[in-house]
Image (cartoon, rainbow, N blue to C red; front, top):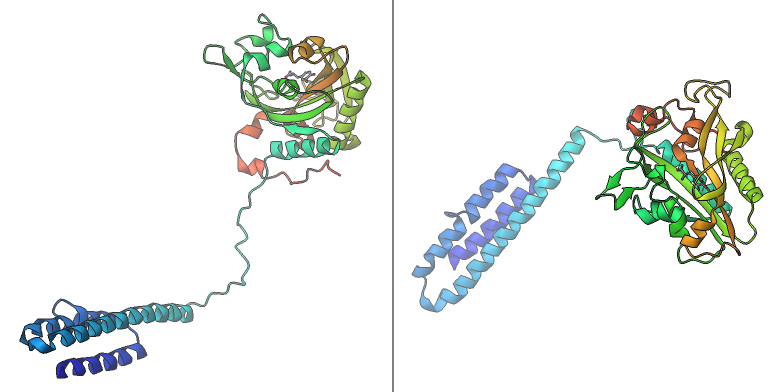
Length: 350
Ligand code: DAH
């Protein structure tokens, strides 16, 4: 008991003096001296046999308490060591968190195609159109059949279309598939807009095998070519401002009648003619037309009661025009030196 009392006092004194100047080496020495295999506590337990049987119980309890005390002292000392190390390193190298960050820090930027799509959605959202999504992988019915593109139509040619699983599925060749998704099972009025990736076997300055389109569809009673033209002109002048001239050229698409192609004046040459516009002064941005009765039939909408118009424009083409890019493929090589140049609000917005 006397030995236990002495050790308890010694533990207290040692811990007080170590706490004054916490130092990892001294703390480790303390651990070995007190709690090590051959340490003071272990030595105490070894004397258990020599203690009278009547006192053993009390002695055992006091030994356990002493051991717990030593362990908690060790823990406190270790914490103090960490704190004092932090304190020392702060004194050695003060940190000024108010200093400005390094100037070359690179910020991310939006891709020109994303900027363009967002802008198009903003305009159509304001005009009351609903934004729909559509699948990149499509089956024959939505991409071709329901759009009045018969089995022998040249648009299905292997030279244009990426087929999957023995011609059962395709990578959609246009966003016009969303017209079918938008109409099936719905009753007009329908006003929808959809944008996304399209795929075709094509590759030059104005074509890329993966490109983006935006599709617009309106179905209601009494819609006419005038409504369509008015909407497209409103949209393009919102998008480009009055800078860009547009023209409609009569054309054929199986899912519309009548149909037209829409051109914008080439911004790269100001209409004078250059390599990008094929020396014509105009860049085609897509097609439009009045929904063909055969399409209405495929989605069970009565073409006697309703009429509609649709258009599908190339988003990449519009981005080229808006940002003055000479080669469409530059958009898809992922060179951040080029892609980070475009401001979040393109110059044409107002
Ligand atoms: N889907 C056509 C294409 O990719 C573009 C198109 C033409 C979409 C006429 C339309 C339309 O909605 O009415 O070439």
